[in-house]
Length: 142
Image (tube, rainbow, N blue to C red; front, side, top):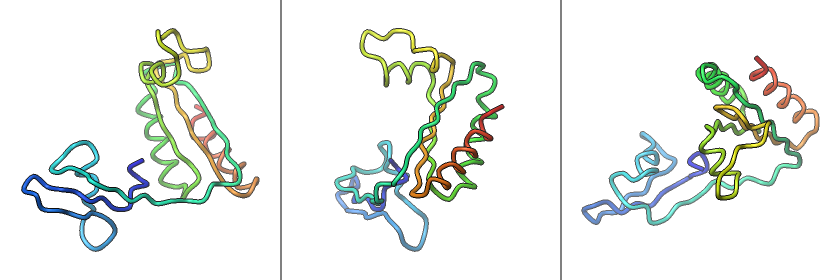
């Protein structure tokens, strides 16, 4: 959710307060996302209207050696797509912890691989959603 953060209010160890957010100078929000030099006491989020259409693409990496090229493909896709795509890559342990009830068992076949990719697509126009879908398929088909 870090990309949805607009502003953080932080109390620093000396008791002073700091407000991060849009404005001139470097973005400081990332310093406080996982611990860091202060305690976050409030956060503002960017809100977006619910998209009209969504689609999910799930794929697996049967071979651990394909991870670097998959990460590069995801980076390129996100850089050239102005919006409407969210990506994540989960290893087998994260997938089991997220999707399977305790006690953990073996993931179902579509998710059985060292890594599983997940792309969430959204658009208001069906043609735009189809174009996003085609872009994801081209990026990860190999």
